[in-house]
Image 1 (tube, rainbow, N blue to C red):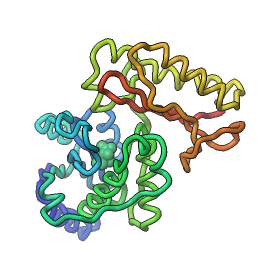
Image 2 (cartoon, helix red, strand yellow; image 1 turned 180 degrees about the vertical axis):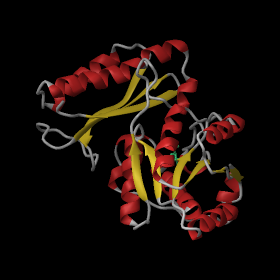
Image 3 (cartoon, rainbow, N blue to C red; image 1 turned 90 degrees about the vertical axis):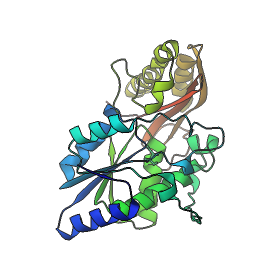
Image 4 (cartoon, helix red, strand yellow; image 1 turned 135 degrees about the vertical axis):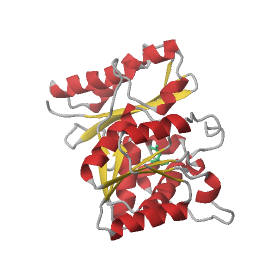
Length: 283
Ligand code: PAF
């Protein structure tokens, strides 16, 4: 496995692979890798000749007062996990090489990011798509794999690729959960034991919504009330948002549910903000 820190070296590595006729799968991450990330690597591994993972805690996507400085990091552990998943290269740049002095260009996202996490984290998704496009330009992947726990991020990146005709296939991977149902996230490391056990209510509430929907309930108000009540029964949970939105446009759904809908939620437990989602299905 090649460890590449320099952006120009990453681009050379990718160009050489492409000139040999090899396809490249890419898994961009911010590190502190867990089983969710490893599942993305396995999907990538199966879809291309070469697998590249990047580890970069991207300062552009953190707002003031967010957890950039304390975001969990584990370079040695991350490299070992990449190696054991059969990555051909790990791209591990530093902020000053990704954003050298004079860097000033950013992508600006649209309506998809005025809602949900975008509403409480202004500028966050502009930072995400800017770094993702730059990473795509360096790694030159044929296919890139993203987790669908970050549902809004997946939609925003898919739209950026479509809008800007970026020649890469975006694959959304299923959410990986701990035994009790908590969606895997690097930020779970911040949770205390009581917060962790109360956070299980998130997946339970999504299951409740799915049960109601499968039983024929189509009134968003009824489903949302049941979900909110379940979460509010946890004294440590503070709802940021709980919404039923159009699965592609992310616009809130008010009338009877007739279009593909996804239940999305963000809830704070102490200083940790957790997100989760479920696309509602007939069965
Ligand atoms: O999901 C993440 O870990 C990050 O937002 C990403 C896509 C690697 C961009 O920094």
